[in-house]
Image (cartoon, rainbow over all chains, first blue to last red; front, side, top):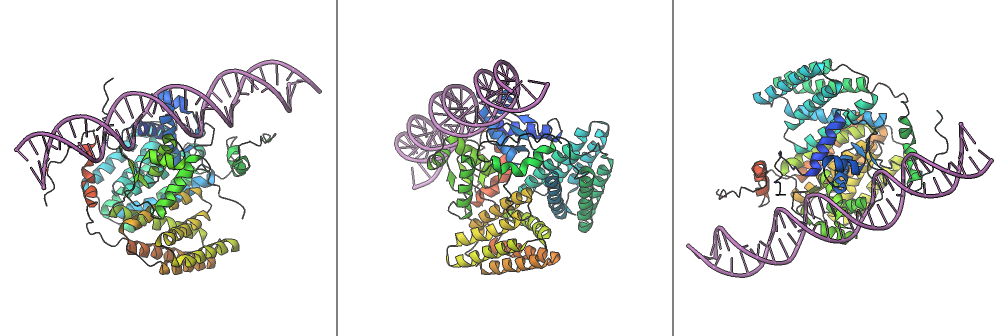
Length: 251
Length: 251
DNA sequence: GGGCATCAAACTGCATGCAATTGCAGCGCT
DNA sequence: AGCGCTGCAATTGCATGCAGTTTGATGCCC
């Protein structure tokens, strides 16, 4: 086989990042739900790479908080607790306020057009599945972050936005995305006008309302919740021998 | 509070995290300066593991932004540009304001004592090297973040704080840490009093002044700068064959 | 039937081996 | 001397193999 010169998009198109991108997208579109198992073998087979690479990719995703890794156990898609979800949204609010503060009044016409085009796309996808709507809405925020030209900010906003998507899978009800779209439009317009204070406020309330709509209640969830409840006790396990929790399963 | 945070996301005891911790600390104490090479072999040998593990650890550190990985090239300690450094501080300010906002008036006596003890330690280390002072100062901020009991916040504050340490290596002059210590004390006292607005303001100015003291000038640096200048053009290289830039060097 | 020991299959943890790429020293040319 | 070229050592990219751990299915005993 001739050496395939790895011609692909901007950054690093090695196999690891291909896998990461694929999994991120699967997670964001809820094709992979929280708790879904991700065995290294299957991943490797699916993507035509060895376990070594699949494992490395899982490590990267774990560093982003999308995947949970426990020693000697199959990797799973992360299942944030309700509190973690709330924390993620709080952080996200601050970061995205920073984004729009930097952007207010500094966008080129082309950039504004790009943002509008994206929201149009969101609009167009309104008939489709929730999964696509959520992905597009998330990508709008990432697009904004990218316009700051601050790689660090892009990274953090992306990460925390993905995490928030995760929590949507867990705690959200079938929700209406229309208002989100209108809020996106309002943000663009305030950005164009350069009204810094207003756009920060808009972003704040936008994300806050998304969070409130998504994180419906701190009420105990279904069976999955057991894992969260038990998490704090995980220390006892730490050594290597599981305690076996005799017959907790009642409920 | 015996309730250890027990960082659920980051694995705690395998060889990878041992290496990561060691390297992070070496970087934070400027034993490893930006640009320092980190060959997988040497790392593996030094830590008594195979290249596979060393490589994985480097991947984790790269995900944190402490290490730069380029295909087929030796990993190096990250050398953030001046702008990236400034961005990191901006993000840090927002995150740490969030930390102290959540903490204001909510700290237990034991926690306040712990914070004071830490600042005492900083004080005690004033005669030592800059490296130790910087590490202790950074750990103060991380300690604060840990008290929020929000693993996500801890992770982001830690990461961005480490990054800021990196920039100190690059752009800082031999600086005086005394005032920082006083500012730490002021923050503790405002936290104890529960004055949310004031503590947020204190934190803001504290970090801002650290940044301003550290990031002395946007003035072009030495040779290293060439890399930064060329960075935007790196896309042309993307494929795999470098363009070789014939004799751009004029001027 | 329900609980418990046992064991094989599945899976992870890690090292090693081989091919491909890079970087650099040395050489020749102008 | 300066500049480009060539070939070898250093280094990374990735797959595979083996050992140890977890999982869950089976059979046994009550």
